[in-house]
Image (tube, rainbow, N blue to C red; front, side, top):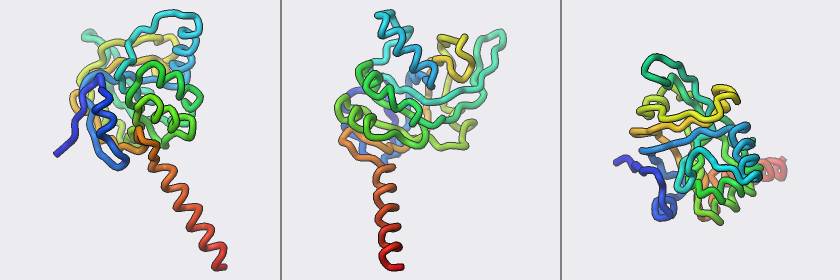
Length: 195
């Protein structure tokens, strides 16, 4: 049976997840890439209001491709971008109350510490499945900072069943990426010693 979590996410939702779990999201998902993160940082430093409430939010590191028609915005495809670029904002995102970060490639030590501190998870979206992921989005509710460009804008999406997503970093400090790195180093060390 599919595990479907609804935003805003709670501490119980997050604490119930461990690496390797497969989940889907329902509710509001916000996109945010490099420029949107920088804009959020700038607004917080100036004590300016943010256009959305990030408490319990799921933030997708993605740049959607959308078109506009008489009915409004229509999502065409949406795929994950590399999350490591957002590493400098780990503490800020945690303080905002974000509970799930979606992307590809994982994040590193500062994010892992923030996940433990603020009770967050990292959800790996399958790269190369942008059309499939778009099928899980019911509508585009809003867009903010479109002047940054289509992929860099902050898109507020309504998800009906978004995924599948794999829990790759959990709130207990476990990381699928670190596990793979550790195993790779041991394997290389073993091969080197036996040579």
